[in-house]
Length: 420
Image 1 (cartoon, rainbow, N blue to C red):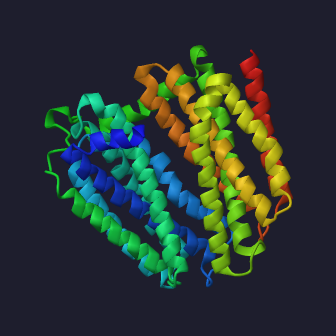
Image 2 (cartoon, rainbow, N blue to C red):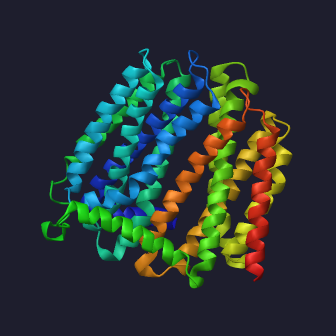
């Protein structure tokens, strides 16, 4: 396979192997920590999970990516990136240990969420640093290949970490704190792995450091505003429409995720372990939909065009989501998880393609920063709306209908734009 061959070529670079080890351990720890946090909020027997609690947890996990992300690069241009991996992972291990201690103590919920928020905020710097360091460990000829394979490997590591957390939780450890401590141990392993690289290997070069932090931060805000204005230009209308469509579809996916969590916790089974198993199965099925989308979308978007493929994905979700969701039964909901994974990821890949091809190269990074903010804020906003609409057991016909109408609106609006 081409992917295996490309990976074998990259692994010949010693420092790439070392940087990849830091990524795999760091993102594997992220997967363990995030599942530990989610199961504590939703499936702990001593807690009565609510949509509001789930919305709070999602905000903790995702908002730092949107609020800190655009500024992470500014600071990474001033700090040695190897040191960011070392101290960032050590700090996350300490904060995760603190989160575990709070889980076993009777403390206000806000204190627990502040601890978790700090962990995910530091995570943004580590992930951005891993991407920024890649040109230092591979040659220019193989940089595109490394940019493709390295994040994919990290995502697989995070997925494997989440699976490991589910296994630990279901195999006999009833303590979510134990799962979070496992994540802390993996963070420490990531810190140790970074020590195999020289502190100056990953840059930045001193002459490239921006002279004043305040000017760099204000410049970032100006760059983001310029990116928004560029996207609003007449030559980029397809990119703007695709981003708006993807934002609404991400909103729908977020709202249905909260509903699924509540259904697994209360409506579909009365046992928390069974509910946790069902949630893991649903997430796995949705992940299979993501994989099928990655295989199907290049062919479908090539034949229809990316914009029309977004129309097909939104229309399919608008029809199938209420048909499979309104019975509120296990079998149809698992099928719905697959369909929504396929349609959401299919639309995202098409949107990525439209943005990459429509936006000028000098604005592409800023456009994707705007994209990242919209993508995560939409998910958190959806969790907030679901918290207001969902009953305690998660069965909400009104939410299912609202989501279906939103998907239909996206399909109709995007279809009209494509006809013009």
